[in-house]
Length: 69
Image (cartoon, rainbow, N blue to C red):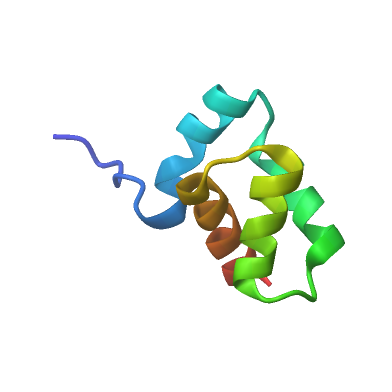
């Protein structure tokens, strides 16, 4: 029996995000600093339109980012 907890919530998308877009999660979180004062969906839009990230992955990154602030 493993004592490790399964990753849940937005962070569960992180391995797929790193694989699909070739950048570390920290890279994307740093980019979100540029739009930190914008609403959630504007931040999602920034990742989608400016960086080509799919909606689900962008939403997960923004949700994680906002939870850390």
